[in-house]
Image (cartoon, rainbow, N blue to C red):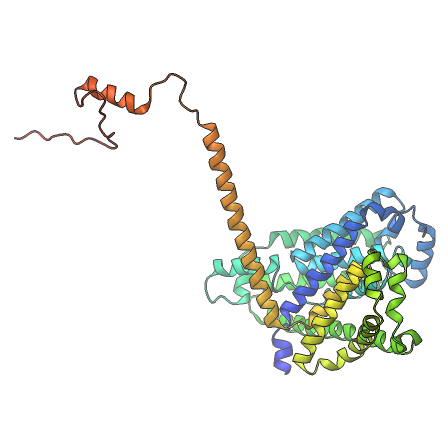
Length: 439
């Protein structure tokens, strides 16, 4: 057991799914709220800059939006949050982009704390946990770059040889740029805390660990330093993955036990009321159809409570867990459609994905690969067809009154004495044989 926890990072596909899920959810939220970003997080919002400054001074929350009260700085931070989400979802230098993703999430959410809901709280927590995971092992640009580097290094190359086979210039430049930005912010006194604690220690510690990792893989004469760092990284990853799983179980357990204490959940009518609120009824006809049946309302109410309370206990039985997990993901999809809470549902589905079986995720990856290859082949055929069509239109046709090719060949044959009128020989392609004079 100890060898397994230290020798490998468990759940590579699960960690990749939650990385893509939370980065994609946050990215879609930022894009959807782009027209309303000023009212939510901007300097002209209802939660003013002075109020936010007083709150962050008391709770020591981290947000770079407090570094300047200007429209230009806000737009830069918002664009940075969008860009970091894209890079993190693609898995480009995930160790660095996970920290950038964390900075983007905390900067916006801690600026206006009253703008969030349960889904935002989940993203807030998971962005912290994902920094400690090795979530770029599969389905990432990092994995693709490592695979290509291993192919160049030769079959059977170990990880140390693979890392030394090429120089990651982009990673080194990114590390240097982030260090320079962090140094400027530190000298300006923008980061809260000292070197003995606080966000200053966290950010500088992450930056130093990244530099140590790269140095050990690049300049170490033996494999021992890199092996030691791998063991530490695996232990931290496995611990963070366990915390993510425990957090998901805690969310469902607390939600279920609090529902049990409510009278509306006890009599089976709790689901009826949000279906008749305008704020949670994007499709009034659909909401009315679901709430028209008292039996349906009762089944959904009791089923929700039973599923949330029982979910942590089903982890001991794989088959029961998979069935209940599929049901809960379906329930979140229904909540997104019926109650108009898409980002909350996406965040919860991404959190549930940590419990998906590895065989299913591998099969899902195979389907995605075949779909991508099929799309690439279809695009290739379409582009070649368009190119042939354009080439056919570009070639000039015979001019009006010009002789046909057959007539031209017949006339040429008659003039040369090699055929009769109206008859043409087959055109000759290639070099003609020159007779060799006899001695």
